Image (cartoon, rainbow, N blue to C red; front, side):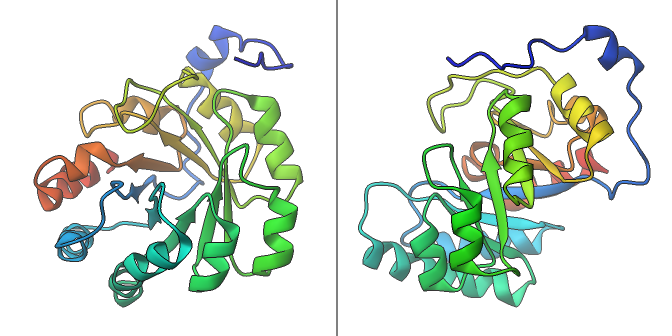
Length: 225
């Protein structure tokens, strides 16, 4: 694990933090399961129809770009029909091929400047920053539209190497207007502390797709409200 050059945050900062009411209310950001075949487009439609969702991230692994594009097309239509941003995970080239609304980059997936040059000024670019204030500031300087911190809680969606404290959301939202996303093991029950800490978006995957997706979206929106 790489140490954040800025060092640890003062815990007293969290105690003194109060969420800025001038920021927009926290919104829900859905992330797909790895298996989006079969009836998943119908599940996505049910989820999006159950309550406000700001964005849907299309995240598939270990398939070629042709198959990824084929599977994405019905999901992209579901999102477009409901005015939900369709974000492609990891792949700048797939985002361009699909004409996606955005791309979400891990630390190994390319530079936001490159993504901006390829995808244009109107596309949303997000960057995973783990538990690092330094990486988040670098992403902002490189032109990212939002930064993502996590994993805040244990998750089975991906291997967890970084566990930030909620105070990093407070620090970020105090100093920067750029939105921040909280990610990792988040459920309707454990989301409120992250909202209070300053998250602009709550990212959810397993808590939605492991059961009744419509009920989960309603529960999340009640928790974010």
